Amino acid sequence: MKTTIKLFAVAGTLAASVSVQAQEVTFKIAHFLPSAAPTQQRVLQPWCDELKKDSGGRIACQFFPAMQLGGTPAQLADQVKNGVADVVWTGPGYSAGRFPAIEAFELPFMVTDSTSSSKALWKFYQQHAQQEFAAYKVLAFHTDGGQAVHTSKKAVTGLTGFTGMKLRTSTRVGARTLAALGGSPVAMPPAQVTEAIAKGVVDGSLGAWELVFPTKLSEVTKFHAQPAMGVAYPTATVLTVLMNKQKYDALPADLKAVVDKHSGEALVARFGAVFDDEAAKARKKVAEIGNQVTTFSAVEVAAMKRATAGVEEEWAKQVGDKGLDGKKLISAARELTGTNK
Image 1 (cartoon, rainbow, N blue to C red):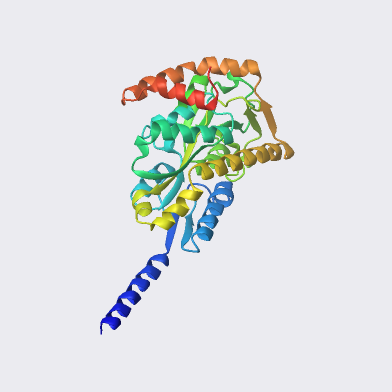
Image 2: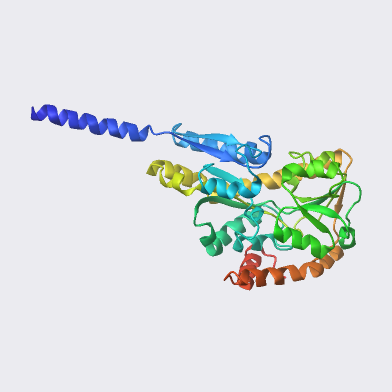
């Protein structure tokens, strides 16, 4: 009888072990771009494929692109926090003022590309912004590589070209930068930009090159402008991959290890490489279809830097009202990006 009891006990333990090992999980992933966008096809889908492979098929992903779960891009941070989605890719700046420290990387002339600035941003997050994302499992941060100027009827070749131009902006820092340059900022989600330009609601958009073809911006704009390679852009957007903290905490230890292995620096590097590659392809492609691409001269960049100097000062004061040392954050961001003035 004792032997039988022991056998049953062993069998029960083995069954429990097999059950734990066989536990499967599906991550509901939401974002604001079409499914064909490089972010899903070249970053998030390969990331999911790696999770599936390394977990022995126990981790799967289900995508909900183009806000299929409802709401607006500004609500993605709440959707993942509340468990509507398990993972989201979004811009913290879409929720104006909610994540102030990380906005330092959206200040004028902070970002030169995606690869180097994204690595710098990840370090900045670890050193200065973890507290404001404590409610999430943060999987990655990256920048869009800098926002070029895309316009429909008039080329913007320098500072004076912004005067009176109504342009879509993605964040409050970007809006202040554009206003300082003489333009009129209009906030709207990426999905609405093409139609707004076609209808004449706005004259164009500040936006990453990566967005030009997925959002069909290329069909309604004929002029594009940017700094020379290696020169920082007037503004940029910080982007992040956030996971529901409870979802992560509920994972078995081995699945947490799989997620951790392919997130953080590895995912940051993937985003940076893809965004820079897509930017190069988009610049080449718009030129091939006959669009005009203007490179801002050093003189014009210097004029734009002078015009936007007050944006940095205003931001430092504003975040200071929230208990943050704005000047310290700016100094840290510029040291990490190598854009010290």
